[in-house]
Image (tube, rainbow, N blue to C red):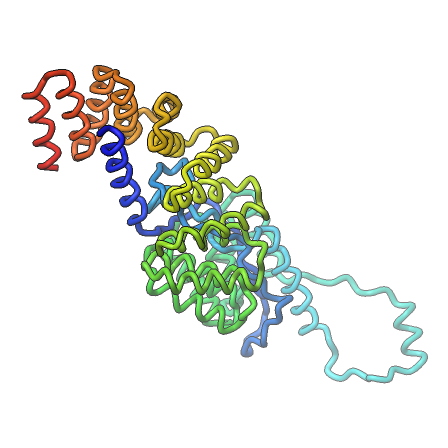
Length: 438
């Protein structure tokens, strides 16, 4: 009877996990997109693959296990580690391109002989190259970048404001200004700056992708998708933009379409372990756990210390009925990061399902040690204790579980069972009634 009730309890939890929608949030720190800072009032030329760079970071679709933000699986607060920007150091390249292109535009003579005379060639060879002068906006751009690298976002933003005032048609400066605004969490203003950049230079794929990621952060998912599409119209060889679009589709519950985007990403660049994790997570959400498992294995082959790969694989192995393999996967996870209370709780639940109650109990204790306000850990601990015949201790655990979460029907039912075993039938019936009322 206990094992059946335990199984029911865990099945309810598992169903809740699988039903949890894939959600996205973002970290406090992001990186800067590469944008051509060109001083030109003419239409922007085509941007080559060398001039543009794709977003350098790959967020991970959240695993299926609910958890606090400190763990790799918190629904609705899970961190996609970066926002699809490139490393800050690459912003220095903006100024170099700005300098080179500006000087070429201003220093070339009106006519250039394609066949200089021997005398001219000799004079040219003997004449040292002139010292290149840097324009005010170029110097300000470099100053703004230095401030940004130093973490002085406010000062950096003021400097970018001066640049855009001096040269309002400088697309790269607007994009960099958008980044500074993003770092200050001024998202609407950041989006406006990115919009200005793409208005001036529409063929900047990485800026369109960044706009999409920013809209995702604002939970404007339907608006984000066309920005990813625009980026991919400009360049079809950006695997991480396909991945970003996949995450957005996950948030909309469009898992089959998301899977297609993840497949495109890994077809272009197989060595993207986080995307393999996301593919596995989506397949699990589609009730295809056997297909999901090899994706986690592929992620681990590229990055053996990727925590999310091990935890997600563990949850999927549970869904596939491979309980011992799930325990092994969770053991890898806790070896990598011991302070994962929900993983310890899940390990304990799996051990209980295998009727290894004495082994399960320390896992619940460890979870509670890490997070004393985790009601699932207290309830599961109570079930293990009751299975070991320790009904008084079990009752204390159930009391703590319902104290933490009053609307916890399974815990109220288990509490009623413990009271019945202790001969306290009136209290047991009251506990069952609370379970029914929810």
